[in-house]
Amino acid sequence: MNKEAFKNQEHYTHADLVELVELLRSPEGCPWDRTQTHASIRRGVIEEAYEVAEAIDRAAPAMMIEELGDLLMQVLFHISIGEEQGTFSGEEVYDRICKKLIFRHPHIFSDAADASSSTEDGWAAIKRQEKGQVTLHEELEGIAKTLPALTRAEKIAGKLYPKEPPALQALLADAEALTQAPNAEKLGQLLFTAARLAKALKIDPEEALHRINQALIDTNC
View 1 (cartoon, rainbow, N blue to C red):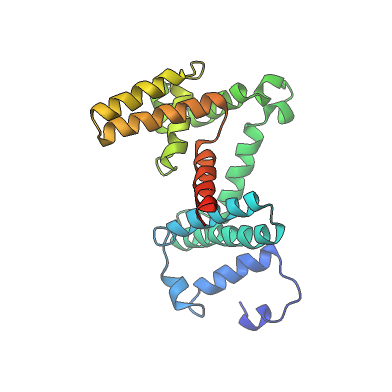
View 2: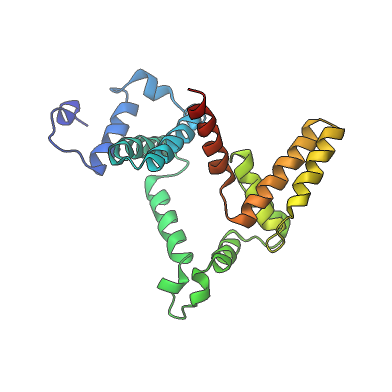
């Protein structure tokens, strides 16, 4: 692995990035990079994903190029650590995602294709089958605990009340309960009902709140 080979190249490829990450983690590489673990750079994956999302919101191609590169580097960094520790390899990561995509698209790859698998309900059923989820509890436990709370609440609401949208009166009732007993539990119930309503209305609650946040900033600048 030659450090000089990375200097002054006119163009770099995915293979170059993989090798560059390995170089940074090698004894000849960066002392800081060598000491990092999955846990120590965990936050980096989250932050870079949010920065990609901001680039998308801004419809900024140049920003997307930069931020997608940062996110890809984080992924390759974790793969490099996994390979060093012998816990998993890049080939396993690529193999798993390809198999998942093929399994989740039977309407494309299956000889006995069922068009219903391309619907939202069909997609959900395929995911349950893939993950071996039989009970509702298993489905709920499968929702990542690290998601933003509003996003997680929206997903939980979709599992618990798939065909039962809440009435606006439910929000009013939760607000009244909060005024009677202003505590975290009552506030949480109000927020969950709002997330449930967002799911029924097909509105991203995180995005809705971000818009209000920015509108308040803009009107007070």
